[in-house]
Amino acid sequence: MSVTNTTVNKSVSVFAPASIGNVSVGFDVLGLAVKPVDGTLLGDVVTVNATTSNDNSLTVIGIFADKLPSNKEDNIVWSCLLLFNEQLISVKETPVFVAITLDKKMPVGSGLGSSACSVVAALAALNAFYAKYHNFSFDENVILKMTGQMEAQISGSLHYDNVAPCYLGGLQLMVPDENVISRILPSFDDCYYVMAYPGIEVSTKAARDVLPTTYSRSDVISYGQNLATFVDACHRQDKSQAFSVLTDVIAEPYRTDLLPKYEASRDYLSSQGALAVGISGSGPTLFCVCDSEKQAEKFALWLQENYLQTALGFVHVCKVDDVGATEI
Ligand SMILES: Nc1ncnc2c1ncn2[C@@H]1O[C@H](COP(=O)(O)OP(=O)(O)OP(=O)(O)O)[C@@H](O)[C@H]1O
Ligand SMILES: N[C@@H](CCO)C(=O)O
Image (cartoon, rainbow, N blue to C red; front, side, top):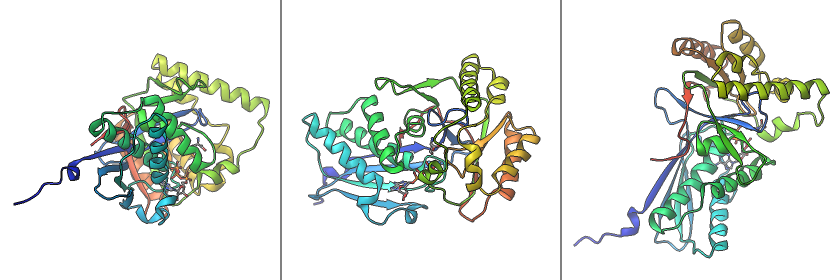
């Protein structure tokens, strides 16, 4: 007679997508979730399983697993579990032991929001697991705050521009109100976003350390004007106005030294009719906004040949991911 262990089947998997932090005009306050048009899962997957063991566990698999610390305590997914359990206890819920698997599909220090993908997938999967099997879940806003706390732990500063779009999908604007945190903006659904990761690592912390601590009055005016014009153009769905102001005066001028071939590639793609070109998050991924799939495929090929630097690099033609973290 075979005995079925019912806990074995208690399992939830969540995929969390890549995102473009900053979107050039909104340093730390704008982010856009993206998904490849060919259906590739560009993001991390976290699976939470019930376990009969008297301990929690974390297994890391996937193409970029070996780029993460070997010690589970240093993996941000482990910190997410500890934080989630603390929050459960604070609302008088009892944590159960779980076996977590992280499928690390995202390169670390890529500018694609790699740590955000792990953080969001972990917290969303834990929440879905408790909702499904323990009749309890935290509100979306509580989970979002936890994702911000975890991202801050890893990068040294609190910024939601990767975790918010990764969790909620679409183009997100961070709002200085902790009851709101992030608000969705209308995005341009007919645009294509070519994402080119060159295969080298740039740590977010290092890319923040090169930034000035003060800015000139003219930069402050340009920053405010570009961001306000972009947000207004999004609401009016005025594509040419929106992308005509996609110029970063806060981070890009100071980060280009960290990004070999970035300036030459940006200038070439702009001269060939790209709607906009920028650094995704803190780099080194470059994003290029295109009006048509044909143009995007052409630029993707060019970037493949001219921007990649190691065998780990890749290029994807993407569209906006309106869904964000999703159970798979
Ligand atoms: N699950 C995880 N995913 C990504 N990074 C992790 C994870 N766990 C621990 N880390 C560590 O956190 C740090 C993440 O660094 P950083 O914030 O620069 O990268 P990132 O989030 O991958 O960057 P980006 O947002 O530009 O894609 C690295 O030192 C990495 O080893
Ligand atoms: N807004 C952050 C994003 C990090 O991916 C930065 O540019 O430093």
